[in-house]
Image (cartoon, rainbow over all chains, first blue to last red; front, side, top):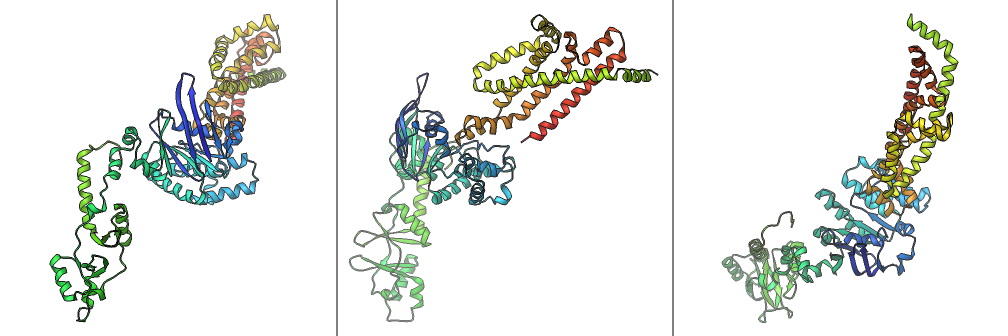
Length: 384
Length: 209
């Protein structure tokens, strides 16, 4: 879709703003370029719509060298959202949105339809907002208009230059969510420049980290967090963010020994065992420790009068379980998604190995937090 | 008594005053027209070639510092006397305010808006006519209004190089030590200033985006 081949931007004082960059951006992908100021992330992005001309190397869009194209026509097919919003203050919201369609000489009916459709898409009723002027809207609303203005001409590519950084945290959060939501519907190829790491992690399919004009690492947020290529990336992403991932304990570390019983045991006997350990469920296993099900105190009491019944008859076989080889993340998700209090841990051959409960999770997390706080002094302005 | 005399004088001199006013208007309009014709495009051009701007605006400021009387005197050896040299001098006077306001007005347009326009695929001509000029218009118009009021004032001196106008009546009044005659030239000149300024203000409001 967008391919950078050895692209450099060198200013006349021999300053390498962008230094031999190679990127391959896939169609429908949201890429975040991130780095400290002066790292060349914005320059890299602006070379895509030729607001800045590359000194050397080629940039291909759909296989075509953009250097051979008329920059004005090129830009009409690339949406552009800037940090300072840049709505034209002397035009109504409707006219602002219709700008690129008009430049592309769409007829009036089609322009109007497009404007209404886009306004509705971001929750600004066309009737109410179309004829207002930008100054009458809040910052968040203005940037919503800024975003849909970039989409108006239906460009396959959208460039966003720190689009939400000037907004208050609540609006920023909302617009990020809306962008994610929008992106699932429109699937544009988006290049997003930001200096906010959390924003990049939240929005991007892949993140390109830049430093001194070089692309240091270009990968999925997950991979970067797990395998930062160097110390710069590690510190840039923040030690505590890295620790969170790296030192998330394994399932084995979190699980506790289960209280189990066998299928043929009677109900009265089981109740006594539960009372002794102060628990409300028993894990039922066979002689080989193969997990069979869970017997809850509720079922046992309900059937208590029936003296012929054993655990096997009252146990629930359909309970969520987790494999020893899975990530703790998965276990946490299972517990919260299913609103359950515990999760049996099994090995590959279905043998019961242990038990994860909400309480055991809390213990581990509490320990984790305590040790993190000891290691890392709180950093000003760094939000978690 | 004195007021009555003034009215009688006005009545007698009415055709003269009307001719003077008409000549005055002609001088003003022609000088402003040419001034705008030069200063507006030049001001826009300078925003594209900013290295030149300081020099060019500097030169026009120098012209502005020449006393108007001296400037008119300068014209005589080169252009002789009459309407022509007066127009040249008045045009030079009109240049600076229009030029400077056009230049600073366009430079003052929020760069983010210009970037957005360029980034969306406007040609530089479209950026100029759809963004820069509309947004700079109040400042450009203020320059034109300043120039107009100034030119109407300086145009009274044009009588000295034989260009006519209300200055004729004023200077005759001075020569004859007749205050009523001075007023008969000065009052219409002041009224002209106010009327022109008012009209331009209306225009400014009308074209306001």
